[in-house]
Length: 163
Image (tube, rainbow, N blue to C red; front, side, top):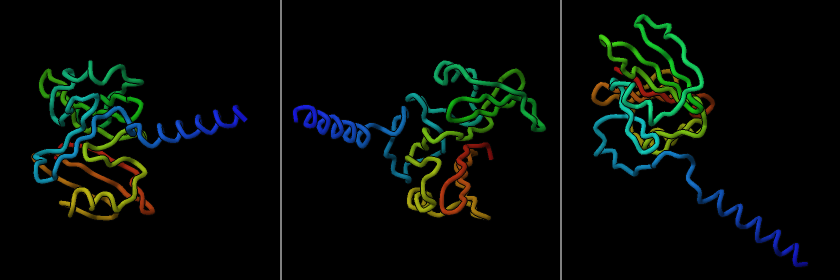
């Protein structure tokens, strides 16, 4: 009987932890959309902005899993991390961030949207898209585009990129 009570308490504690532990290691911000002046990823409490010097973020991002040359028309690299990838380009000798693509389900926009979330979350959070076509929502602010691709009512792709 004592074991059964301990088991029930243990299960209740596990359920409480699952419900109340944050979804990932990002700091969620509850920014009012009227205050947003650009789209960027906050990771490990640091704002990572498109077109900034990639080298400034290496200590925040940690070790990448893989790195390849970009196959775009501009010289650069793609750095693969557990939940996202960063594509860069060169501006002279400075390696700048061209895009950040979400690849895992343990990373979210600053407004709390992640892969696998329902399509309705996009418009409920960001309002009317700057551009919407073929299940792609694009929101543009100050030379940065935040894009969502939807399939069967679920978000399957999230990307920050240069405009």
